[in-house]
Amino acid sequence: MKSVHFKTLGQTQKKLVAAAEAAASTSYSPYSGFAVGAALQTAGGKIITGSNVENAAYGLTICAEQAALVRANAMGHREFRAIAVVAKGRGQARATITAPCGACRQMLFEAAWNADRDIAVILCSPDRKTVVLTSIAELLPLAFSPKKNG
Image (cartoon, rainbow, N blue to C red; front, side, top):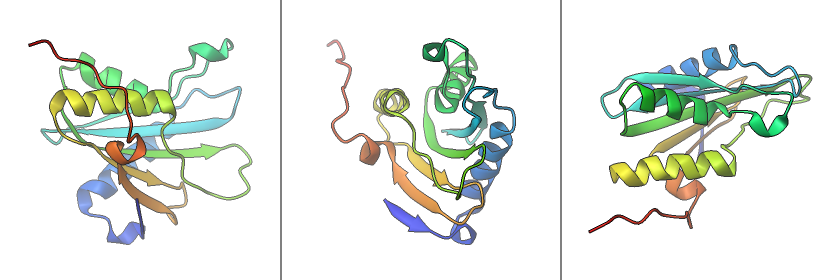
């Protein structure tokens, strides 16, 4: 993992962060007040976003990263270069980064594993003062891997 300044990000990375910020604004999070946006970049360069959707039955909540992956899958995309995640909580004392939860890490890992390429991960605080660059392999080093036939 590497902490960097927002201004040092490349144009594509900045676009991903901006798309994740915009996606967070569409979050349906009336229970937690914790809005999360994710922006997934396909191997072809397309940006696909997702936001978290809460439910009164908390176990049915969908994470932003999962929403972006499912949306991309429905559009026929299976290979990804990067994902940016931005989250903001209601009444948060200070802006901080939020990393994907364990379930999201596993889903991202499987997408990376199936495409035989790691996925870069950009974690950015809503004030853009804290940015961490990592990868799904680094976030989930001992992931459960599917077995391929043959």
